[in-house]
Image 1 (cartoon, rainbow, N blue to C red):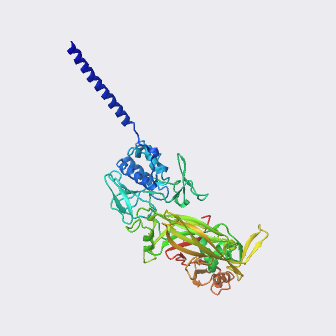
Image 2 (image 1 turned 120 degrees about the horizontal axis):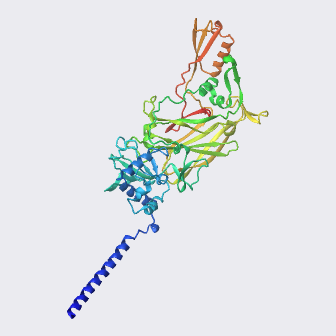
Image 3 (image 1 turned 135 degrees about the vertical axis):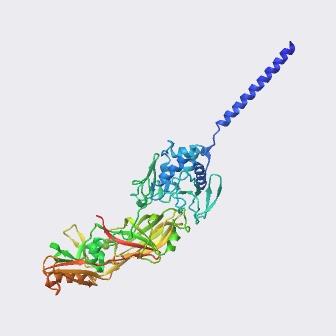
Length: 547
């Protein structure tokens, strides 16, 4: 009996011991299961955060839904480049019903950790580069191509840290890889919501509120995005080299085309069917016309390679499309300086070889010309300066720019029309002139590439043509029967209008034989004058707001 109780006590003791072990083991398991990383107190530098985001993305790209979503968003070109701005799209749903951030969070320590990493940079961007025929946003084969991920910092270091599914190594930003790669970077076309920006700049918003400003409206494609990129085929002669406004101005006042465009000073047909000549030596400012940049040409192929070539292994392949920055600098009559800064997004697939230049320089025709200003020569004088650079983000620096402009005294007030200022005579009309000088500071970054300065003069020509050619067709009756043709060239506009005036009055020997004549402009206008910084050429045309 005692032996029985003893055995029972041993069994009970063993059972109690096993129960206690199971209890403590269970408690330990529960404690391990519910321990979460202390994300809140983790501190990342911006560089560390970008690296960690790249690691997360490199793992997540094994998910076809992630790849499909990034390609779809990149093709929208929301900033006129193949950029996916993370905070702008993070709440968008993918094909599997998860948001983009939820999809990425599956490949790290949860959404809280992902947010901690991503929130270090409000402009965090996934860029899909163009790698020749190997990889691009358009030809990304999402079924089979799983890209690696590299990190691009704004410190201009050549080595780029590369993360793949099972590897970590370095790439050169000056040598294109031969395999698919996505680039993590801070967006250079946007400024944070708390940055000082132009009041008219548009921006991006997400569910949390306003996200960021576009540095310039030319980068804003958010309101006209499409889901498929269709490269625009641009013809070299598509743009209005021979616009009616410029041709009329050239015929009306070849010696100072802008006097005709902005003040109506010159000669032109008037009356029924242009049967008389109207000549004006004074006029008020036409506020409907503006100076505009219509094309940009790199003076030498090496200049373009210097700033970046998306199709050449020489250059920063992680940079994306070019961002050209223009600082327009003016001085007014009181010697007060002004600076207007504008940007231009240059798509690599729209750069074409200039067929008229045997050196193979590249030219870009703007779909939408950059409007500069309405040239009020009374207020701003005869010159303004353009400082050009290829913008890359970095540390803000300032440089001092000097500028001067000459002001004529050939103006009077028109008391009958709200005291409008009237320009009297072409150019300075022999009046006394006064030169105003000023200096001001303009901002750039330490990583931007300067492309030089240029002075634009009110008296610059528009066309490089030397002569005005006309065809005079005369008939004995108002019909082609019995017609004779005469070809004439004039070196000055006034000579042309003198001839036309004589022809209308029948005082010209040829024209006096006919009872009906046609005068047809057959001038071959050819190349237009360009403003050349030495590195880049700007074709600047006055244009009408109505066009």
